[in-house]
Length: 61
Image (cartoon, rainbow, N blue to C red; front, side, top):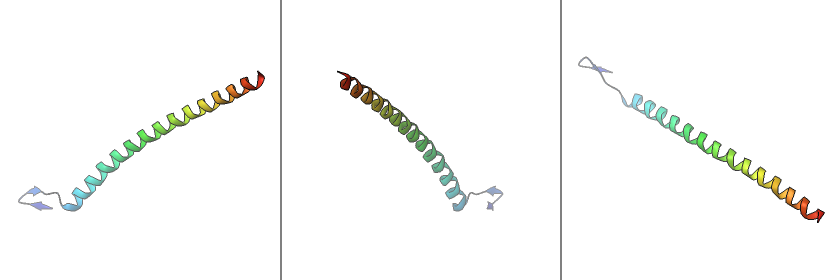
C-alpha cells in the first residue's frame, strides 16, 4: 500500500515476515535438538556395547 508517496507495510506483510522469522528460529532449534538426540543415541550405543563386553567378561570368569 502506498500512502503519500511512502510504502506502508500492511498487516498481511507483517504476518508473513513474522511467520518467516519464527520458521527460521524453529528450524534452528529443531536442528539443535536433532544434534543432541544423535549424541544421546551414540552414547547409548556405546554404553550398550560396553555392557555387552562386560557381560562377556563376567561369563568367562
